[in-house]
Image (cartoon, rainbow, N blue to C red; front, side, top):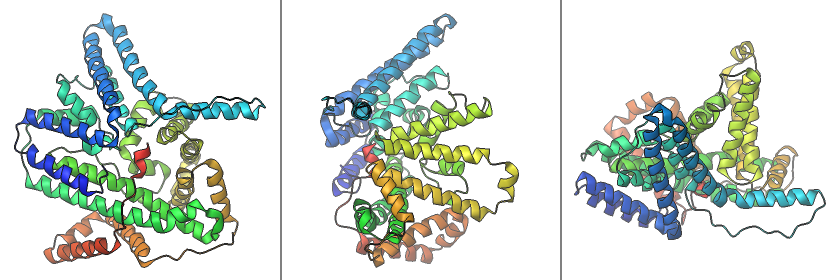
Length: 466
C-alpha cells in the first residue's frame, strides 16, 4: 500500500475516524490491527516474523531489567542482551545479506581460479526489516544501559514496533521517544490535525511531483544508458538524482510524521535541509538524522568514539560509515558509498583548524556539495561498474545525445531550491506566509503546479528496498 495512493488515503481516513471514537486502550488495539493489516498488504507471509521478533525483544527487555536489579545477575543481563542482539541481527543477515555474502564468496573463488557450482538462495527481503530491527535493538540496549524502563504492556510494545506510519522506511524511532506517548491520554487537537495534513501534503508534493518527475524525465533514462548521453547530460542527471533522493525520502518522512500526528503522536524529524551543509559532519547531522544518531549511539560510541587516540578515532569513524553503507544495501556499491563518506569525514578531521578558519565558507560549501553529488552516483548505480563508467563519462567530454529538460522539470528544480531557501531563512518565510493573502497565493500556486505536474502513477519510495 503505497503512501501515494488512493488506497492509503482511504485506509488512513478510516483508521483516523474510528480511532478518535475509542478509548485509549482500544485505540492501541486499533493501531496494532491497522499496522499489521498495512504490513500484510506488502506481504502477509512476514507478519509472523515481525510478531516473533517483537515478542523476543519484549521478553528480553524485561529479563535484562530484572537481572540488572541485582548486581550478582549482571552476567545474566549480558546473556539476554546477547541473545536478543544475535537473534535480530541473524534474522536481518539471513534475509538481507545471505546472497550478498554467497555471491562475494563465489566471485572471490572465481578470481582465484576456483570454479564452484554453488548458487544463491531464493530469499524475499521483508519490507522494512532494517528499520524495525534497529528499533528493537535500540530498545534492548537502552534497557541494558539503564536509560529506559521495560514496557509492561505487550500490545503497546507490538504497536511501537509495527506502527504503520513509520514501519516501512522510518524515521527510526526509539522506544523512549514513543512508548511514553502510548501511556499518555491523547486528546483530539485541531492544531495537530492541521499540522499532520500539512506535512502529508508537502510530502506528497516532494515525492509524487518533484522526485518522480525528475526520475522519469532525467534520472532513469540517463542512468540506464549513460554511454548514450553527453557528459553535460550526465551532470544534469546526477544533480537531478541528488534532488530526487532527497525529495523522495524526506517526502516519505513528511508523510510518516504527518500520519502519526493525526493520531496524536510526534515522531522525530528526519531531515534538516542537508544541502545547506558546509562540511561533511554537518551533512550527516542533517541527512536521515534518525539513522545517523543510531549509528553514532550504537556503533560509533561503543567502538570508542572520539575518546580514544586520533588514529583509533578516525578508524571508528570510517568503520561506522562502512557499516552504514552496508546497511543501506547488500551490494558493494553501497559499501563504497559509505566508505567514501568515511574517507571524506576522515580528511575533514585531518585538515588543520587554521586552514578551515581561513577558507571562505562558499569554497567549503561547494567542495562538500561536489563530493556529496559524486558519491550519490554509487548509491544510484546498479553496481560499481556502472558507477565508475558514469563518473568517467562525466569527466571525459563524452559525445552523445542531449535530453531536453521540460518546463515541469525546471519547475521541480525551482521548488527544491525554494525548499532549501526556506530552510536557510525560515523566520522570514514564516513572517511572509503568516499573512492570509500570501498564504492563499502560495497554496493556490502549489496546488496548480501539483495538478499539472503530477506524473501518471507513482514510483516506489527509494528507501523501501532497504
